[in-house]
Length: 84
Image (tube, rainbow, N blue to C red; front, top):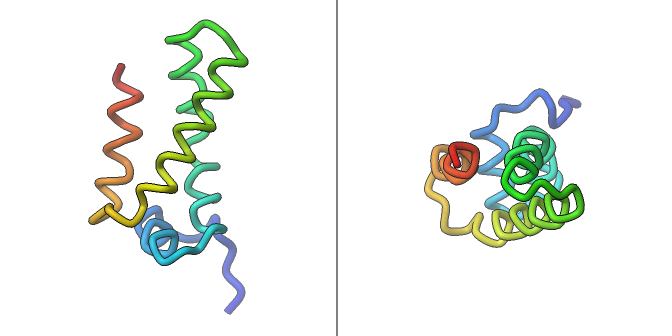
């Protein structure tokens, strides 16, 4: 079976990413990168700062994957940022 990452649910991708699948995490990041960037841009009013902080956000998320219990934990972090 030759499924693309885009075909998988967020939950499946989180589980794969927790097992070290960088491609799965990359797809998760792709799915929410625009929302994260524009949320940070609204706060900073600076494109370079927004780019840098968005990158740091994803790096922190990747490092924290091992402690996540579910997709809700992954998305809750980004939802919290988006509600600022």
